[in-house]
Image: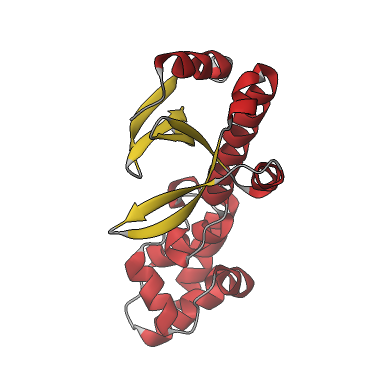
Length: 199
């Protein structure tokens, strides 16, 4: 069961300054998002706001209950917090809480995009190159950055005799955080020259 018509109208009015509200099935209820940012959930006629970073602390202090989702009969507490009657009655504060939930969720999404977790998440590096790097003892992004493209390339070359210059450029791009096609010209020239001297 979704929110009542009046409650949904109130919610839509609250978020109108943020953008157009979209609905999709989520966790046995209805997920509510704006521009792909899933910040709320409706289940059994209740509204739950997503809690993360300091939004979660505020929701807990206010005594908002966590959403419990039953996954294959096992109850799982999710980071969504129920909007109580007092909050529905205070339009200004309701918008502040919704806005906080939206902004914190958006910040989380941006943060995840900015911080690659694995080598394969870097530009130009796929799972195959990640595995090759593991084989030569490079498993973390920091290790790759500290070693640099040339030293990493030499390690890979020792392990596999045929290592193309494209791998060197791909490594440099990964370290720089850019696609190999937009590698700074000076860096590309330096690497190609260095590679030629190796042959």
